[in-house]
Image (cartoon, rainbow, N blue to C red):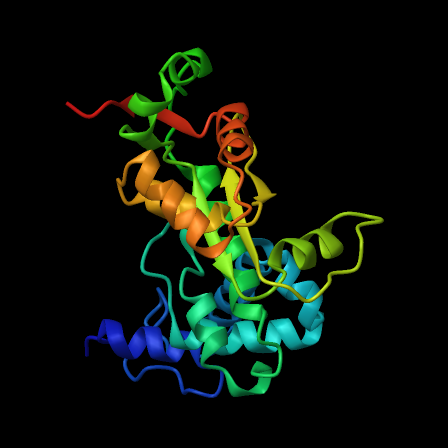
Length: 251
């Protein structure tokens, strides 16, 4: 009897599920204990992969709670790729819909931040523009121009202090988070991604640039949420961290 792939995966990821009928070892005997050992190894490996991918989530929840939640996630979201570097993409949505952690409203956005850091790490390399290219443009031509952002760039906007929470759980001596909305830009100028706290208005500005809007339109988006938005400081941040790979003037 042939064991279907669906029934095999379901049994593999569900501890109390019986061994699929018809599954045998190389000697033709019922798989039994061999399958249980394999099932346990798979569950532990996937849970370990999630703990590596979401270290701050694991720290916030505590090891026991995290591994219990990860076990539930593994059963609902089996890997779709053999590349474990990408496993866990559904964790932010899973946490958003998981009632036992509903009182920890910042958890999904922290998961989004950690996922974005991993995505940035594995993103393609790109050569940034020479800052002098942008600085040489007269203001009127700059404001009608558009840019291409590096593939490793990620923008995470949140109603929670996600950068402060992340720092507090990663860096020794980091200040205790104050409850305020924060927008985070993830850059990767060299090898390791870095999350940067954006100034007021920086989130809407970067989101508009990423959508292909001009500097003028993006500047308006920043000003609409923060009258004090500092365009020069934000551009300096982008150029310092190699975030812009192409500058295109309007015809």
